[in-house]
Image (cartoon, rainbow, N blue to C red; front, side, top):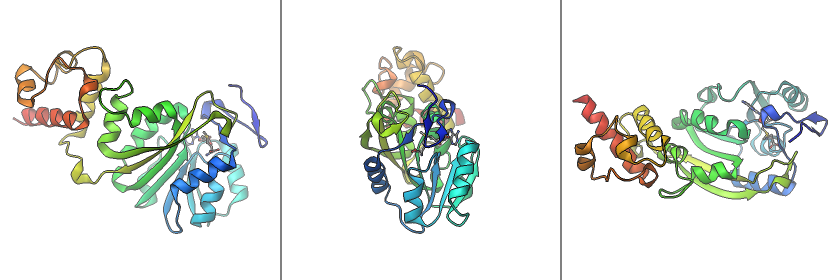
Length: 265
Ligand code: SAM
């Protein structure tokens, strides 16, 4: 993909810039978000404003986080501070907790940083009402994947642990300028209530899930040998000959809690 001019702006590959240009798709995304006046909302990567304009029209006020200075200058010329609060910088480092709660998060995310953005946003889940994103379809399929499928992995487990998620609809490359090489999808994420989370030590859960999927072809006996022995597998009622992709989110939580309890003595 070459850097190309869109609406007088040269799209920057390093910022994952593919601008939505299909009015029908934009309308469908806004309908899926259902913005209401008074909602506290932040858009990640407003770009040339394809979604920003209809969002401000419905909300009255919107926050945006944008890294590209040229685009920030254009946004400043178009909107008043009463309509748009611009947070200049990297969404990966942004404190989403500073915007108030319950926060609604939306964005046609830069695909080159989609996984780290999702993990960063997970840390603010207790202050978030919902999130609606455009992502590569392949990433969305991994987010919503069921155990036992090829797409099921660390991203599926860690996000499904914290969020209820649904793929809303797919968006073809032709809806963007410049057109990306891949299909995209809209995904909706709603944080689960804290009482449904259940892991005593979430960092430990993350370590166990990472280990279980680190070498996908190996069995749990091998990938989790630093955490579980044969007696632990028996106590958990788990077959050590399985691979990580067979385990449900609840089973990963049970393993993490068993290890946490053993470590606590
Ligand atoms: N929302 C616009 C649209 O739908 O046409 C633009 C979407 S474009 C795929 C991604 C946007 O995210 C660009 O505006 C880009 O400059 C911005 N961006 C890229 N990396 C970013 C980061 N780390 N933090 C904040 N914004 C970023």
